[in-house]
Length: 376
Image (cartoon, rainbow, N blue to C red; front, side):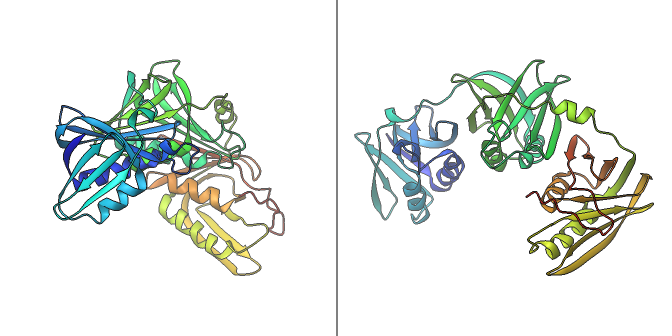
């Protein structure tokens, strides 16, 4: 391999694919980056931890094709201290990469490319998304997935066809996020993808591009645009019946309120109660034309905010896990949010546009205004 490439473009490619590398893995090759040059004037940069694979293509002046793998951290750090706009890469015997600029030369010991995991190839395009919509759907669901590693199925995000549209679902047992996209998806399509991989994908999406979702040659699901591919293995298991949860939700009180003032009120309350070791909760006291948001701590004091709202139904007082209600409101993509409630101990539905979020409250508020449940 012998080529010249723009240093900033190579740096960008490395920063993207590095999210799939695993330098602490049991196989040294999983901490390496694959560099592969072809006759079309392209340099493919790739990384894989076996479960997730990322690739990115950059233009290059290719004098000789070839491929090699090198440690991701070494090449990334080296490019930070190289001068000039262009860098010359030359592989020696597929085991050493020579990196040169106009003033310096370095040699990086690598591993032959034939030890790198096979790259997945797209077989069938299932659907295509506007990148902005896909990013929004991922951000509105992945936060609700389980993170403790005990139930792999709940650590994933269900992607399935609902009314012929791609729908994303995540739950940790206490909350449930559902987002239906405008992208078409054939009836019967359903699979679970790891939320960790989808969170990384969301960080990489450019908002002005289109992203295709494809099946692959190694039974993974691939997301791809003009330069990048991001593939991940599906999670085995059966996802909970989330539709039954949504169908069983009832509401006797409906609150329509501006998102930002309600979120800011919750953030103020959380600042006061965050040092509380027991019974951390934010209380919504819903009256005729407002939501009183409060947090109280024996250690730090109290915070209380009246947020104007349109309320249809009976007054109700309900407590939430601070982290859960704040994350739900942050996921809302719109100036107005609707909250549907039935009782202090029943799930509430938070909705805005295509986003629906069911959330379990904490134990019912007692007459003294205290409760004991504390789920973090």
